[in-house]
Image (cartoon, rainbow, N blue to C red):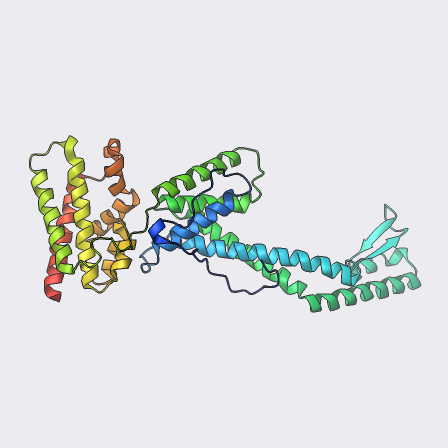
Length: 375
C-alpha cells in the first residue's frame, strides 16, 4: 500500500471478482484469530453490503449498511495517512537535526531545561546574561528555520492536519453508526466491527467485555457466511424472463391459497398461511416494480426484503397506508420470512395474523388497481 497518497478523497470499497457459477469468491478460513479477525470481517461486510446494492434513498435515517462503507473508507484512509505521517516525521527529524528545541544547562530545578519557544527564553531572562540570551534565541531561530524548510519539502504539517481531520471524521461517523438501530445481522456485525476497530484495533485488551466482544464478532461472521445466499443470476434461474402479468397471476394464486388455508385454521397451524401471505406480498410488489421499469436483476437482488421493495414502490408511485408501510418494514426488521421457515418455535415473536392479512389485502387491491390503470 503506497504511503505517498494523502488525497482527501475517500477511496471506494470495491468487491472482489466473483464467479457466480461457483458461489462466492472466497470462504472464511477455518482458524480466525487476532491476526485476521478484523480484516476478514471487513472483507465479508464489504461483499455483503455491495451485494445488497443501493436501491434508492429510504425515508428516515440512513441505514447502517450505508454508513459502514463510508466509515470504513474514512478509517482506512486515516490509517494510511497515519503511516505516512510517521514516515515523514522520521525523515523530518533526520533532515532538520531533531525537534526545534534548545537545551539550556545550569538552569531550573534539575539543572537542564528544554526551551521550546521564545516565550520560554523570556521567562528565563532573570537567570541568564544578555549574551547567553542572544545565543539561545539565535540557536532556536536556526533550529526552527531548518525544521520549517524540511517540513515544507516533505509536507509534514499538511499530513498532520489531514490525519487529525480524518480521525475526527471517522470518530463522528462511528458514533452516529453506533446509535443507529440495525435492521439485519449484517448491520449488527458492522456496528460491532466499528466498535472493536475504534477501541481495540490490536485486539489486545484483556478486560471484560473486550474478549467477549471479539468472540461475538467471530460468531456473527460465521452466521453471516452460512446465511449468505448463493448467486442466482446464472443460466438456469427460472423466472428470469417472467412478465408483469405472469407474476401478478402468481401473486393472486398465492393469495387465494392463503384465503382457502385460513378457513377454520387453528392458531397452531398459522405458519404455512403466513408463508403464503408473505410470498404473495413479495410477488405483488415485484409485479408493480417490473411494471414501473425496474430491472429484474435489481429486484432479484432484493431477495426477501419487503422493506426495500416497499420503499422502491413508494418512490415509483404506489401509495399505501402508513400502518401498512410500517408493517412491511417490520416484517423485514424481524426477518419474519426466515423465522416462519426455520424457527417455528418463535411464533410469539411474529406480527399479528390479522395484520398480515390486512397488509396483503391492501397490497393486492392497490397494486392491481394501479396496474390496470397502467395497462
